[in-house]
Image (cartoon, rainbow, N blue to C red; front, side, top):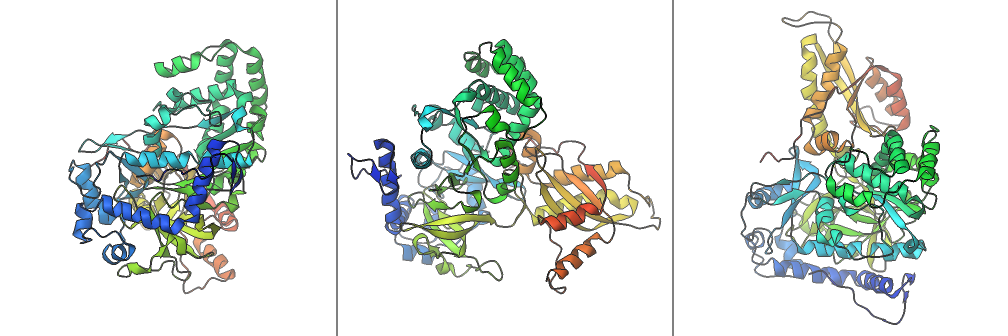
Length: 611
């Protein structure tokens, strides 16, 4: 069960965080104080609850816990595992086995992780009770924000929120992203009115699976209510930038609808039409204003020009999203960016207790009631402290050390036990007895534009597949690297290829220059080989642009090595980086490009699993 807030002083709004704006906030803030002051004992209680609840499951029975709920037995008997270790059990549940395999409570649905296994989305089993736990964490966001930004009850939030397509497992359970699950839940749809958390977007627009209709309706409502907007946001920074790009492309139609008090026939979803038309009336003055601002061709500070009362942006700009910070600063005129929550499909973890800090200073305080947390120390020399056969080396939440990096391991009420999430975190401090972490990176991820995560093995496979198309021209890829290009919206993968084209004729083939259209097809072949999350982002969401191959002249990667050695790299240990972000290296590569090619079509994708 989720630990509930406990009121310790009902007649005061004074808390350890400072004075709260009202008693409701004070109750939540005191609850967080209690949790963080007693982090270790809360963790001990959470583990005991999880092990007691799931004592009769097949998984815990296999490791002979025999009803034990203490940490020592748990650590001695249960292994640290990855998704691949649990995949047989997860697949049985997905196929319809309703016996208590991982969890004693019925699995209600699967949450699809943005990580992949063998090119398919990972399926994370969850239970209905987890929605209560997630809702509890959401309920703590506004009380914290109210400490830093006054007057949020005097306006609204323009949030661009979307659901994604979902599927059914062979056993009939829904499989969908965690946010799609939350937005479709009664916790979200029937949420009680809160003057501090009012959205401009109607639920009907958020819950529309057609991304164009959803975005258009949300943008239109945001423009109509522009003077009420106090904060602008999306889940990820890339999502907010897609909204700005949408405004750049469709402002004329939006202005026409506002001027006439009508809704374009492109919006065919009846529920959206009914929800939006009620708030529409002819407003030629607003339409002229939008036309004036958007027709200039100058988009600097457009957020504060259109929504002048905006106090901050509410977006995730940590990890891979940090690449979008300069673009957001340009469009917002330098508004603060609030990163409020740290969560994943596997578990919701914690909050940023200083949400208005600079993006580079964001740290998340893990709430010890959300699950049981352990940490694998990351070795500074080889990257990891391998725990196979030495699971006792894991560190408990309350015992991590400031300045050190760890890989996060979780045990959840839904049945994941000692599961490696793959996030690398650095301890930056403590709030009371609860550690605060800076998100460093996802383990093994090379490329990411939005929710996609492509690792080195996937990239290598994609290059290998695509290079088959140039073999008939007596050519091969001798070296390659990559970059997540985000200077345009949507961003896209850029792959740098150095080719070897042999002059000698080959039997049944062609020798010489490779036609441009063949290299274009190589782009599509690479996309076809990438994981389903990438392909969904390309096909259904439009959040990633066509993959680009930039062919560089022969000898470029040797120059790259010379540059690295000049900066102190060992010639004996040098390996070509498979992803580059360092500006001088990107400039070197781009200065050697002889041709650029883009995917001519969309890769194959369908919202079903190939189980």
